[in-house]
Each structure stands twice: as structure tokens, then as C-alpha cells.
Image 1 (cartoon, rainbow, N blue to C red):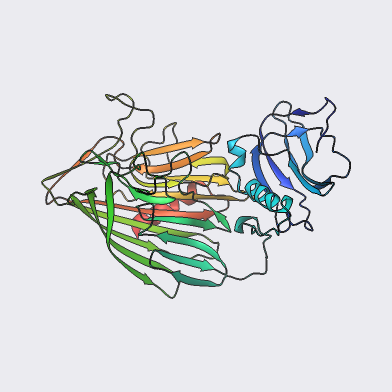
Image 2: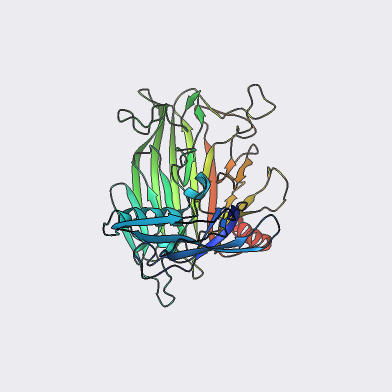
Length: 424
């Protein structure tokens, strides 16, 4: 499809926009501009007869010059159809939702099949005149707030992943969360999980979790006993749950009462999720622990995590962290915001506020900000600074607010949200 005559070359990886979609071709019909972290094959000499379906533009990281090249083509070779793209040089690029959609559609088209792969919600052309039309959808495993045909948020319970979680969590048609990525299949959007309870792992799946026999199972089981859902006319919701923690095949060692309140959507598209947990031991002693951190015996650079967590969409780029007292490790803060450029270039993010009236002084934020993989994750890690030991008759009470925010934000606005939260 491309013949550079020895003059073509690969530029360094860069964040670029894929655009100028051919809206008459089945592969690219209905797609809107999106961004990808990829390298560009420059100065391509396109074979005769090839038709361009999309282009790529970005800045060369070597000298900053603007790159603008056709990047998606089709051709007819005899009776055969041919598709080619210069995109997709590594796993990071191939995780991109836009590129995946193009490749899947191209596979159907080249096989002379009808193209049935739908346009992802985040890549549909926005209809500016569309008004909000909220409604509930509920099943025996999910509760969803819909806006027209799209999910605004969805809570999942009694599911194959063995833990309750929010996914998708969306803002302005962009999904913020990521579920069960290849690098950490036990990461479940916005969720709560302990790591070790009395030495038993409740976080990760067993080594053969993919087998048909075991499914997504951990050595420790977080078992839903009861759930009560109240849906309000203003499209807020309350979810009250009772859970038990026990080793697989063993007796329960701890109970949890989990109360979740989801606010109605506000006029700017934002909303918040209040997350409250009360834990009570059923045995004489419950030890809540985590992987040791660096500086401790058998410490790991990735040790310390447990509790409320969020794993962000792997399409995102340009991560930004805002905290009231900024430092390299973000440890002791009352709130932290992580924001990004979404797949289509808009700004969006999440701010977690912790209620210090209910948490413990051991909480330190655990942040992973690695655009190369991509791996965006953070948590008010309740066990980072050490284990918690609960005796029978004692209780651990945690309380958080999770703000889902569109557009740009700043420290003053986020601090005002925290102050209001603490004074409510």
C-alpha cells in the first residue's frame, strides 16, 4: 500500500490526532476525530488507486515540526480488498479505542462482509441540540443511569469478577474508568477491595483465574449478602449493601455495611458518589494488611495499596495531578484530583475527597501515573503506612466523596468542594 522508495521513515512517538475521516466509507463512517499516542510513518508514497480514509497530525518530538500524513487507506487489488494503516506500532497504540474500531471494521470490510461494528459512544459526532433524557435501567446484577441511549454510570454487583464496582463512569460521553485490563485484570473501574485479611489475598485472582473451572476467583471471597436500591425522581440513587469476607471455603471473619449515594447529574454534567464503609470483625482479631513497601522486609516498589481505588481509561493522555499540598509522592493530602485529555481531546477527571472524621491517620495516597503503558490509577490507600488490627467489638468506619468532573478545574475549586463536603 505504501512505497517510499527509501525516503520514508518513522518519527518518534507523539500524541497526535486522527482526523479527516471519509464519512462515505463503511470503515470510517460515523467516526469523529480522536487522539492516539503513536509514531508516524512519514513521507509515504501511496500506491496508485489507493483511497485515503483518514489522516494523522502531530508534532515531531525531535525538532517540533508539524507532521501531517494520510494514515488509513483502502485499495482494490483484482477481486480482493486491501486495507492499510500506518498506525498501531505497539501495544500502547493498539489499546486505543479509535484504532481498535477502525481495525475491526476493516477486518469485516476486507472479508467482503457487512460492517456491523458500531461507533463507540465516545466517537460519535455530538448532537449539540440533544437534551438530557435520564432514565433508570436495572437488572439482577446492575443499576444504570442512562442519558438517552448512553450510560452515565453503572454499578455492577454479583458479577463474574467477584467484586462490586462502578463501570462505566462517564462524563460528556467519555468513559473515565477501565475494567480488567491485561496488566491487572483485578482492577475494576471504581471499586473497593482489601488486599490481605489475616494473610489471605482478597485483591488478586488465583493464578488459574482464566480457567473455566475457577473463573475470576480470589483466595479471599468478598460475598454480597444483601442489597437494597433506592432510585429517586431527581435521578440520585442510594445503594445499601451487606457483605461478608471469608477465605474460599471458610467461615466469615468480617462483615461490611456499605452505603453508596450517587448525586443527581448537575447542569455542567458533573456528579459525585459518596462511599461509606463500616467493617466489624466476627472473630477475636482481624488483621488488614498489604504488600510491604520499600524500606520494609521484602518491600516492593509497588507495595502499599488497598481500599477505594480507581483505574482510568487507557485511551487517556496528558495526565494532570492536583493536590492541596503538592509533593512528589502526594502522601498526606485530604483530596487528590487526577485529570486527563480524553480520547477526543476534551478535559475530564476525578477528585477523591476523604472524610478525616472517619478515616485513620495511616492513610497515604497511592498514585500510579505512567503514560507509557498506559497505567493511570490512584487510591486513598488506607493501609499504606501500616496494617490495621481490629479486635472483636471494634469497628472501622471509612467515608469518601468521589467527584466526576468535566473540563478544566483548579486547586481553589477543588478545595471549595472539599470544604463543603466536610461541612455538609
